[in-house]
Image (cartoon, rainbow, N blue to C red; front, side, top):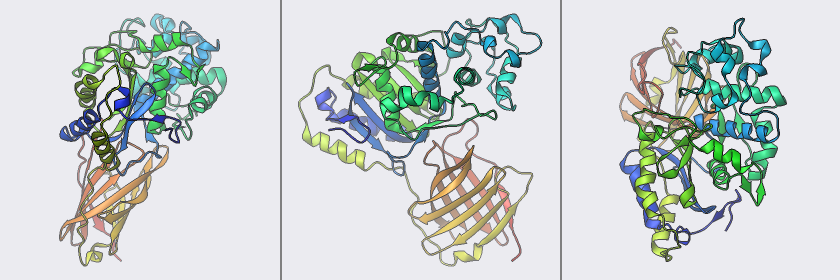
Length: 475
């Protein structure tokens, strides 16, 4: 049976995986407090399990963060196949008008393959310095290159951007426009979006948003070494080069990040490889067992997610089909259909309208500049003005309502619920359902003011924001 995404569905047992093992994987995610948003497991090209934790859903795209890098690498692979460039080409040759007055010997030696393998020679990740400017290419080329390219692995999202900039220079196309006829259309990937830099070039190292089934098809495309529907779209030699160890990537506290790095793909234990993005966006390929796993999530414990695959899924893989187990399969299907993230209870408060109004916050503090509260019988509505834009957040009591939240480069959908914890404390849970992120805000009201305390489920920095107090404007 095929789904709308073109992937065939079948029972896990028919592909040598017990349904009970997949149920144990769901248990593992819950027991380890891993906030998973979606999961698809494929074996031999067939979907054996799939689920979305409500309010996330199959039809919504999800931001990939650095999993975007693997798609940028793929675009370079197509360009190499078409003779537009080689991995041995010098980076400086593409941008003669952006070079510093004096090109250092190490910068002069930097090649496309060094961008691909995160071995540009920079001793520290230059991404922040590059992306704080209006011209990312010029900024990248102006940096000191302390080591000889190819000798040192340093994670470098700006380097991936340079791959996008090279492709843009050669073709005049964005990554999406270039990949659409070569990859997206053949695989049935529609509705992809990709953020752009101030110069209008795709960011490359992050910013791609697609659906979970698209991630799964991308992994299957790599498992099949560039073949789709019997046609060789991308040559197998590129797939092999991109996914093999090109450079040592350790040391790291998390073992999965010490297995080596390819061309924008990480090597894994157990002969596997993956593309991954911050907070648990995964495309894991296990060639020996013909398995692809696509995951989106909102967690800081990415190693924990992978441990579940190795400890539970991997030992359950049989080379031959297993006897069908209808009872276990039905239990698994029921669980997958009922997956949901926690929602706030629907506790209401009589007379909440007394706290309605527009509150103004100290303009010197981070966070909202103003917040307006409106209250009804079944929920509330908060409108917040930030420096980046306006958040419109309807909240249901015990149910989600959809709003919008400012997110570069525009707005992103939010689903929010609310609950009164006591007579003067309102809790708001807002999930940005096309991203990994969810925000919980405790609003404590007092005469003429409100204090906001906000936490986020996953973050590059602290997960708790400084509290801020707003004053009620006179009516």
